[in-house]
Image 1 (spheres, rainbow, N blue to C red):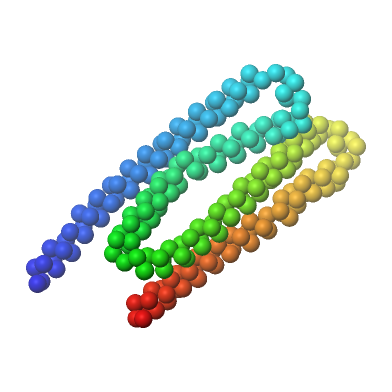
Image 2 (cartoon, one colour; image 1 turned 135 degrees about the vertical axis):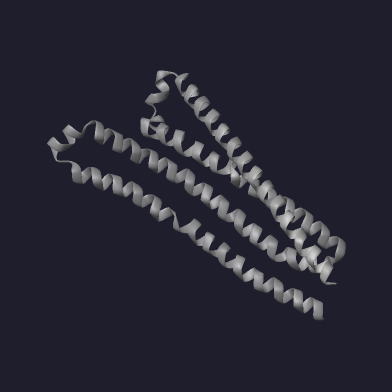
Length: 215
């Protein structure tokens, strides 16, 4: 018996080494792929801007501040999604799929008990993602206007100083930033709800599992 325990415990060391190697290659591969993707996107986006007509840059939504914000924020968002986070999402989806498949195979009732809190959290998470996407779209528009204002003020700083417009410019810039702050409470409230559900559903699921096992 002692010999079997020693052999079993010894198997955990090579298993840990295998997981370490796999994790290393997973994060490195997704990190390199995300960096290459973002590099290509930045180059192609800038090349697309260079092919536009002059009238394209005369539109208010295509000001210098808006274009700079898009080039920086959009590529950064894709880099966050296409890097290690994409690997984590793929890993989570595969684990959920195989976990539910094995659960249905062994015990359907207990799997349903686990699935109900899971889908509740999933629905709340989707709502939070949609609200965050809406907030990002609206905030990008406001930040582009604020960036345009900042660029114009810095470019014409001598005129601003001569006309003593510092307070007026500061008020306009602060109003734009405050608009984003006023809109951000909805996604924050949903995120807090999802986070609270995450911790609550753990206890609820365990309680339901013990109840179903004893009944």
